[in-house]
Image (cartoon, rainbow, N blue to C red; front, side, top):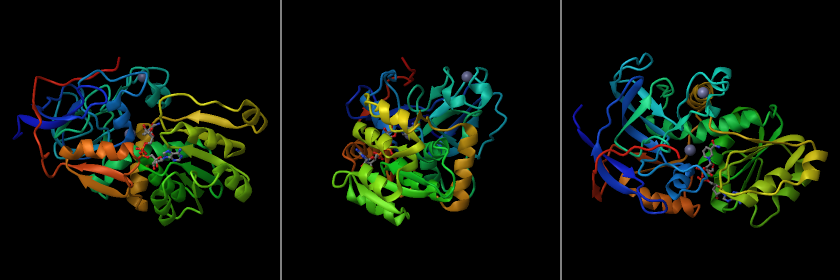
Length: 361
Ligand code: NAD
Ligand code: ZN
Ligand code: ZN
């Protein structure tokens, strides 16, 4: 296999910089494959994970990263669906039980036993990563590893979220938040035949939204998106909230058309008030949505390959992860940053102290 050790970006304490460490290359167990990472997107969820933002926290230490793509270099026992040399993706849905009421009805994302890549198990902010072959993604030949990486979370999450709005072709969807998720959401929405409105708080994100062909781009720090959407189209049939910011949630509900559906995918910690009167009298559906199933993943990757859906990618080496996180915190990333493993991480901050494993608490 060449290497016995690998570099990984490790969270040892919440809200502290990640450390680039030299760790043993993991060994794939039953049903597992070992992937030599070529690319891994940086999702805002990785930042929530490293900051310990959510009620269910990862157990320290752990390596984040759930948009990982690379070549299979070793397979464990019982692996049927991958062979050495295939490209595989490790995503947020790392594994599920396969037997519960959600697993057997095609809702494996909701499995109570599900493991999450880069959260409850180590992810792909590492030169090698283990994946469960039964849940890993097959990467279409038409996509480079750097191009495929953002589809593994940002792509599949927004594609599924758009389906969950139950909007019909020709109808309007509003995408609130034009970051990593949102700028892919716009492209999926267009491919699915919807008319698209974009809302963000930064003009450069709205410029990107216009380049991607939205009909209306609204900066909610300057104009009231609720008033504009009501005046221009009488409310959006579907709303997809990707912003990691609570005020956006209240606005998203208010932008939803009578009988429309507002889908929440952004995950800012906290709560927001739901206007009971409006939700009842307009018969609005408010729905959460979590990444996508293996079938959604297959569709999202296939659609990306055949329709040219692609993130606006900036590549960085693993050693830049803390700078990338700082920029993500400030809303200063345009599109998606993808860690490119063709160069090794720049600095070696700490040395390996045994294995890094993680589980949810
Ligand atoms: P990102 O930082 O790349 O993008 C966030 C965007 O929201 C930025 O463009 C920012 O300018 C914009 N924004 C911030 N405040 C806003 C506001 N008040 N109104 C409108 N726009 C606003 O983040 P990302 O990687 O796209 O992730 C976004 C969120 O989605 C995170 O909370 C992440 O954890 C969550 N997420 C959820 C799922 C899921 O399955 N539900 C999957 C992936 C990510
Ligand atoms: Zn993600
Ligand atoms: Zn299950």
